[in-house]
Length: 423
Ligand code: RM4
Ligand code: MN
Ligand code: MN
Image (cartoon, rainbow, N blue to C red; front, top):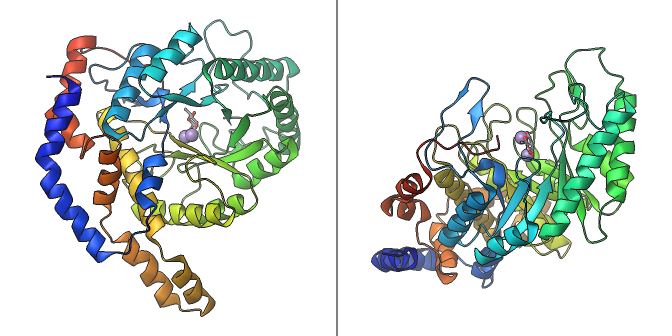
């Protein structure tokens, strides 16, 4: 049986239950008339580096049927999108995934209904036959020729992106230092800004540059773009097309990420997201698996802040997943992440903002908490499923993926010992 007809059969079987759940929430909660459409418009890009089983520095336990080529990675994202209709873009990491024939790759992606989201540069590893090493940094390096090599790489990545129709580049630097005294902080900062300016100068007029920050790892004493303040001050020096990117796993423990998001958005310098979840550090776990309330609070600020500026939720920020899967089937994990993000977004759309503002103005702390937590405790999964259904997707993607034995088919097709490039 082909995929389309098995999806049809599966949806038909689940339709009664789904409709009952949908009626329940419709009777229970005041649903904004445009909520389903907003959910339908909201697409979350899948990282090309997260389609295989990731590893840690202690080992890697690869699963079977992993994509061995960029073409297979696109097929995997196409499959995710076929199931959830909300993963309509792929974000490439260069040089892990360099298209040999950009037009052919672009066409293949389009056949799957996929666009190319931000391209990502990599100056945190040395590649085979690379002339100079990034051991002591890239854009911050003491040696001008290393900085130049890193700048040239970023410009190369932009070119690949242009060929594919991407509109943004994400720069994440591991630059920093491992020991006190190793680095002149001011010089490292200035060199980084100077290098970024050269990359920025190569940006096409309709492109954005996202500068991602991270508190620590792989450097353990200082990171040159270590927090949102450092990123923010740098992107301000670059210009209107430069923004800060928030990766949820890149903060020191207990950071108030929703407040960071709110302020960056207000300042017009929030560019986009790398969604994941964590308990300790940059754990790169499934979005919403550890701190779903935090994810909701972030979306609450996003909806509030974007509406205040009249922004388009779907297209004015970059929505990307950045995750790694050590013990799960990567495709199941990505389906779970997308669903968790949609749930948080749907809940944020349900918040009664007038009532919340009134309660805030009256310093009614209890009422403020009630408003947010009532929404957070509302089961909105039927709304998310309804949006998916209207787009022709699957009622429950993970359940369908399992019942259709998709991983088994991928293993039959690609073999049980395949290792994807990426994390
Ligand atoms: C970093 C950061 C970047 C990602 C690399 C692989 O921690 O999150 O976004 O490209 O990992
Ligand atoms: Mn990231
Ligand atoms: Mn990370």
